[in-house]
Image (tube, rainbow, N blue to C red):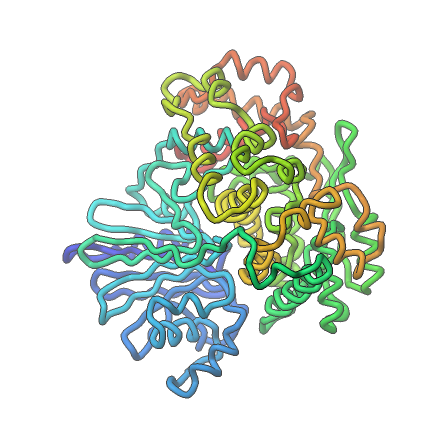
Amino acid sequence: MCGIAGEIAFNGRKTSREAVLKMMEAMASRGPDGRGTWESGWVALGHQRLSIIDLSEAGAQPMVDDGGLTVTFNGCIYNYKELRRELEPEFTFRSTSDTEVVLKAYRKWGDDFVHHLVGMFAIALYDTQRQEVLLVRDRLGIKPVYVSQLPGKLRFASTLPALVASGGVDTSLDEVALHHYLSWHSIVPAPRSILRGVQKLPAATIRTVRADGTWHDREYWKPEYTRRPERAAWTVEDWQEAVRAALRTAVRRRMVADVPVGVLLSGGLDSSILVALLAEEGQHGLSTFSIGFDGAGGDSGNEFVYSDLIAREFGTRHERLHVSTAEFAPSIDGAVEAMSEPMASHDVTAFHLLSKTVARHLKVVQCGQGADEVFGGYAYHQPLASVPRPGAHAAFTKSFVDHSHGELLEILEPEWYSGSDVSSRVLAENLAAPGADTALDAVLRLDTHLLMVDDPVKRLDNMSMAWGIEARVPFLDHELVELAASCPPEYKASGGGKGILKDLGRQLLPAAVVDRPKGYFPVPALRHLEEPFITMVRDALRAPAAKQRGIFRSDYIDGLLADPNSRRTPVKSNVLWQFALLEMWLQHHGVG
């Protein structure tokens, strides 16, 4: 796990090593164990290293291969040992790193090398012979790639602020992205970012960039959310066993490391299953971590009773972090600093604080992110099981969208109107696309492959990497996702959501953990705003920069400030916090 950066100059221009160094410096926390650069004519690459596999200098990057290849790589290839054994008859290896396996895999299979990689990855690979640079993002977008097209050159980096730090990037706010942000609780899906001058490489994409500045994208993976004939006769018990086997494989894969691996244990179903499966794999004395907060507005601030129960059941070395409101408020700035884009989810700061604690003990953790999207765990998923296929858009909009297009016309100043309901159009196009049998299939596909990438996945990457922590997500193993995509949706929607996972949980876990209301990393202080958060919000929305930018209508903001907890989104987030967080991020990073 690392930070990558680079510049590609076109039509005989030279690259700027200084720009690459600025990008690397801006994301030093992603790779505190080393730094490297490489340049040759029209390509310059940079790398910030977090040493997880092959801790020696032999694993340093950018890595150059005798075959005329150079790579800078962020992530982990979980099957690198198996691939190495397959490649060793043809190639000589100088390290024990997964990075070198990526290079040799490309030499053998060309662009199709991605189909052999199991893991999370963002790759920039320069092929001297073909005079091309490949930018590659993993199937579920777990590892980020931000790009900026500048006059005569293209830059890329693992974070948006790194690109901004390189200079010359258009940092004005994108009106369409703003519409998405306010419609989908701060999600701005690829290829857009919140800034006009920065884009994101979509998940499961290879971008081939040539020396003349031309480029093309290829989507290399897209599972079908349909029933497969070879599984037509499967019973629910067959599906349960298949999911258990695939998840066990996913967990085992993510133990690959030359350093210890722990678990972020919320006490919920998903992370608890991971602990149970790791115990089955013989992982005794596993380190686990949980976080809790003061209650607010009648909401409990922790789930320690459940995480403690799992820790006792499986004998983990458990550390729980309780953060008081007085301690929590000052930590908001650090979380905002770590955000590549503004993220209003209440648990972003929770992940930031928990990662800080984990960093004192470990470099690698597994966590349960992605299970809700893949297995239908959110409250809005269950009603969709009975909605006809053509009704997916209307049903999803009703239960998910924060503000309608009409409401945004009342919230935004006229210069920030996008002109049309761009967010609804994106949802309609994705939900109507072929390859999904039912309304719930279509929504789970949308959640998993478009929205999730820029909410829980981005949140986890940003907050963990701010402290040099590699967070691994077994529920986003691509083979498990493929299996779940073909699973009859009623098995996922049953039991109040994630029915098939709950059945697995009953085989592995204490009943009290399985048969309880769904929880999160609860942060009540950001759902029910009290002091000092009300002052924090007011200061952000009434700051001179906010007034000059003029995004929100002042009368609308005044109404919210007069009653800070009066407006909640369909997913129970505080509307005022959503607006304030955007301004806090823009002001902190000096953009927009």
